[in-house]
Length: 263
Ligand SMILES: C[S@@+](CC[C@H](N)C(=O)[O-])C[C@H]1O[C@@H](n2cnc3c(N)ncnc32)[C@H](O)[C@@H]1O
Image (cartoon, rainbow, N blue to C red; front, side):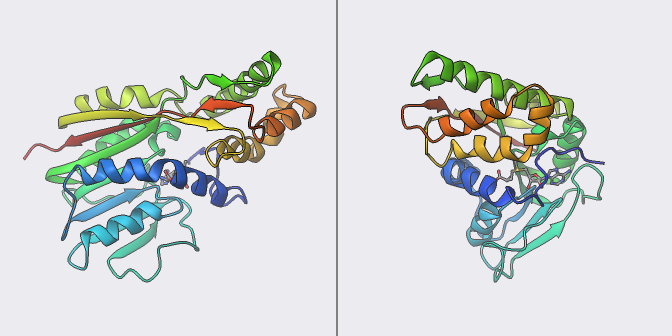
């Protein structure tokens, strides 16, 4: 059974997907395009969330291609309708059946980080590739998000305190907040070749779409943060800080690793 902390049936999920898509889709599209994905390809988008990348892939592979977008909680709304070459399925990547040798491209962004069984899931994704197929994994390294600007020294301390508690919750649920830095090595050990990795980060000032991710994430686990030692006042001050243009924090660095199944 999955212990995914940010259950996608929660009211905060659409805002989470929107923040991720705004900040990271341009990077993801660039990296995916570098695999050569094009007409006729068969693609698997794992944990596709709001669906923007699945829809984009469907447009790229065209009528002779196919995209299968899976998620524990497929979204009913969004850009996924009216594309005959796009199938959306409820599917647990840890436990449900996945075909072997089926896909030219498998992509997952910010999914394996959350799964205690991430190494086994990686092996499953590799098995799902056709010979010569590409795996593209994109994961956060949550270990480098320095505060870049703060209205006062206490603000930086408050940000770090709340964020540290959030990371503790994720870790207790089996996530690995540092998975981003381990993906390249894991994909090498899984037998993939032609490995390439890049890391993308930017500043998230108060009030920006990216920093809103911290709002929805902490809001969704508010009860657990309060039970774990964050006070109601601290949480309110944290949420105010996220709207303050004098505050800025580094985005989560997104590590993208591409690797190829040997022919
Ligand atoms: C952080 S969101 C990322 C969504 C999307 N990939 C993106 O980057 O915008 C993680 C997604 O993985 C899905 N997920 C979590 N556990 C899963 C599992 N065991 N199998 C399939 N999807 C899962 C969640 O429902 C959610 O949509």
